[in-house]
Image (cartoon, rainbow, N blue to C red; front, side):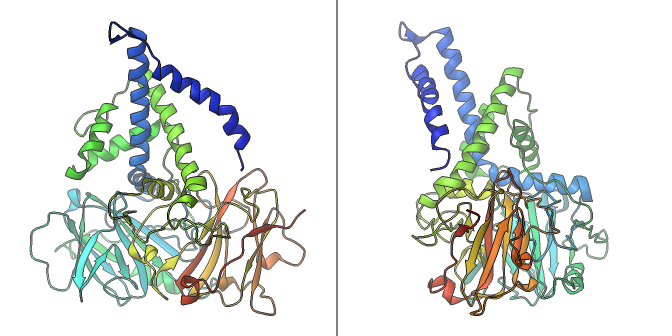
Length: 491
């Protein structure tokens, strides 16, 4: 197992720390001054670690909002579009470089209920800022949540979506799909598809037909702006150090208080984060917060790299390394019916954003699937200095398209590998074998004659791979088609 020697070296240190706390002296049945200080600081540290992990979905998304607004401007009318696809210069967790992205952020507390006029032939998500799909209408006995477009109630025909607070009590206006949010802030996330990577005008025209404005104020609303994220990249990653808690404090100040969060708000209050009060940790608390954030971040990475595969349904195949980040088919990680799977939740939000049934639920030839791997066929972590082959058997089961993308193992952003995009998709027309299968290569240089089937990696950088199947076919679900593992070929 990779890292086993480091674990062995650390174990005595961790055990000694635990022993010191467990055996901290009480005198006359009361803690000594040193014991009280040690236990108090440890409790502060532990609460900070848990606050970090619990708030990951919110801070991940709030970092995207702050980064976007710093670069492109703020407001319901600002919808940044990566007009030449999202390359590795933009820093955000696990973006898809093989369709057109547009991402905006609306604030119900500031602007009231918001209308999103969705153009036809798009697919997208409406999430609150804990990345929970908004609750939509019940149509034909089906409750829609989060999705709009092809897998939403408009079924790709376009429509008017009205985003309202969770306690909105007015009758649903005719001609709108009403979606309720538990947070003031809402992510509006578009995907637009193309068939020719050299002609991105059609999907750009679709997105440019979007209108977002306060309900009842279409004529007086600010004119839509569509900044180009491809030409002006943004930094939208959440912090890995103590500044994470400053960002969390800014988020808490902007947000409504959800009664379901009172216990975790108590955890936040215990480390100094309360709505309506300044966040002013002492120097010593700053030191503990910094250590807690760095520890929690590494814990979250361990959960996706190691713990996730052991969860129910965590592996797609018992004999392969491909992991299912949405095992359980529940976008809120509540498939058990009795608890939230925190391992799955932490693992996902340390490396990704946005969740909806269209991404999660098994729907033949709709939505998408995202088999992911950070290990090769031998179980070793992927190494940017080595060369691997990925064999995709004939008839890849994607009615729309398939792609493979490489990501930085630490930031989960697209790997800056020197290529225009850190991905390869079926529309790029990679060379097929005689039987219709594909052999794809990952390494610092292309094997001879395989340039069209190669994704570059970076020596000294770990990475992971996501195989995307858009509109997956039945062969994926019944596993009559399975991708091979990443096999090392340079030895």
